[in-house]
Length: 117
Image (cartoon, rainbow, N blue to C red):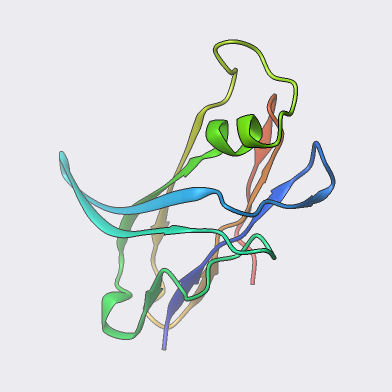
């Protein structure tokens, strides 16, 4: 059974990013369908997989991480307006039984991602 999970690591402060709002969208042509909306927990992860079972299907998706409010709440030094406020990651699921883990490593000035396990 396939699943999609994520986590957010705050590389500026060296810890999991708790309380980051994120949204998942399924992209079909020009349409953007909301699939999930949640917050990261104390470990920087979501409490449940973003996609699991029948909701997990081949397609193109976008994860949108709202990092600006997270860094403002911590009083982390940023620009005004912040260099990074919303970080979108667009990716495709091609394996219907795969585990796709799409983490975000982020600071106020940079981010990276990869397909994890």
